[in-house]
Image 1 (cartoon, helix red, strand yellow):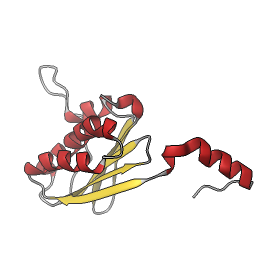
Image 2: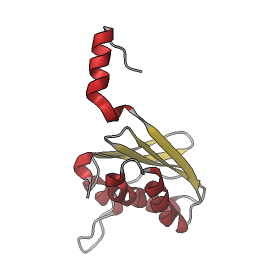
Image 3: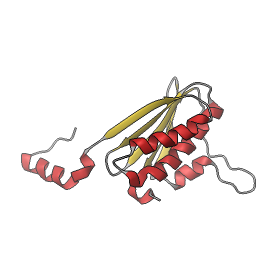
Length: 144
């Protein structure tokens, strides 16, 4: 919650931000199967109805993040998407997965996490005692 020194400064800030002041969040639990890849694309398209210009890039990023899960864990995982109106954050949270690493393949191919890095403002991961979360933030500069 932001704090402002005066009522006037609060009104000025809020009117300047306009559409950025709303926040939408969505979350779904998905099984660690290949069918979850298609389902994450469907969910991101449903959830981003207010920002259709982000659907393609966020779906691509979410797909790449989800594709790491079935091979690394056999437990369900969650897909989270959050937007403040100007950026979209997408995260995959699951139990029992090692930290993601960019994997270089023979023949010069790029990994899915290389694609995430190229199509998002930033990305990363963090571990907890029960599992790992991989996340990415997509900004207006990343739209297709």
